[in-house]
Image (cartoon, rainbow, N blue to C red; front, side):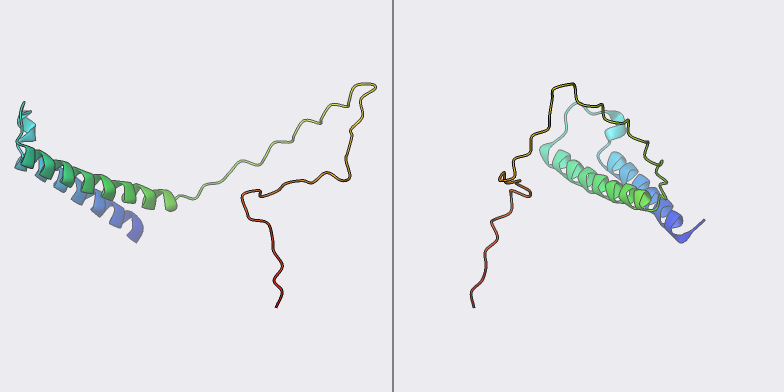
Length: 109
């Protein structure tokens, strides 16, 4: 077992203990119908913290994966143009690339 996987296993074990602590502290295993607002807020806050820790552990597990992607498939050849059809290129037409960037300006020093 590597250090990373033991760290993740330890983290998941601590998350499990924290979750059991929240359940036991607020008697959630009894499925209460009504819960005081302060206890509910405290439990929700603790559950959000646990959720954040689990998300980070999942992200760490995903970063440790070695993904081998399949090679790209060959594209099908594009069909020829029908008879009587030509591609028209306008030499003066401006192609807009990265239009969200401001126009470049020259600095005169």
